[in-house]
Amino acid sequence: MLLFIKSKEWLKERLHDSNIRIVDCTYSLQDPSYGKTVYQKKHIPGAVYFDLAKDLSSEVQIHGGRHPLPHIETFREKLEESGIHEKNAVIAYDGGEGCFASRFWWLLTFLGHQQVFVLDGGMKEWEEAQYPLTDMVPFYRKSTFHIRPQPSMLADIIEVKAEMNSDHTVLIDSRAKERYLGCKEPIDVKPGHIPGAVNFEWTESFHEGKWKNKDEQKRRFSRLNPNNSIIVYCGSGVTATVNVLSLLESGFQHVKLYAGSYSDWVSYPENKVETSRNEAGL
Image 1 (cartoon, rainbow, N blue to C red):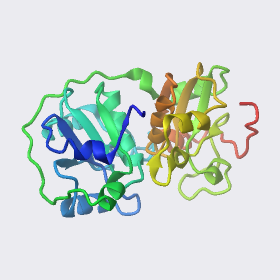
Image 2 (cartoon, one colour):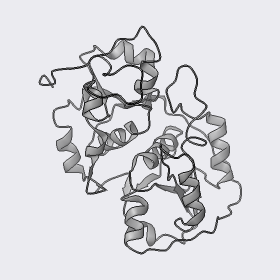
Image 3 (cartoon, rainbow, N blue to C red):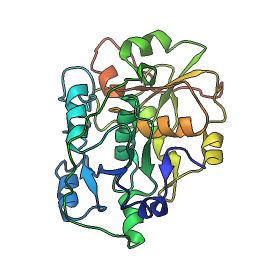
């Protein structure tokens, strides 16, 4: 059984549970207005909306990547306005991609919340099952959310540089293999990957749109040493959260997100990249 993933059946049975808070994270990188537009037309009853760019990220700066982490106080205010406190069980969903809901899951877990989940299959599975939808925006009484940050979940560029050649730390690149290898780079200023990183594509966390089970995830990461520390990155710190969640589900305990990710790394001209790597040693 997966710890952080809940089925549509689980959620349907709890739609009227006053202790449950549902968060819609639907988003499109190609159309930033898409998620809010869809939410206004249809969403799971009781769901509040969190926007990747406005709520789950802060303003883009010279450094920090394309989706810097939100300012903690601003994010807390949004949580409190949504009636979310640390005693709620909170479940997030997106269109079915898994990455936007995982970003929310990571952020809330980072702030110390211990009951945060992701809906398996997202809105796609929910709609296909013909489960209830609504266009009504819920109202919740403002809550108080106490922050207990978990610094062991987060790595910055200083730590990445310090650990990238360590025998006790593995750096994971979660992007598509052609971007990792430097064969294709549609977004960032340099093709390739952070030196020493190995590639585990985030999309391999899923099978036919649903999260792989614990045994399947463990097989994905079987060549990694569970005693090692792991730092995970992607292009901007969003899709990497899928691998972070998958690693934790697999039993790895020392897993950090490099939130700025590759877009932060290459924002420093002096940082080198690699365009190929023999991974056979792992």
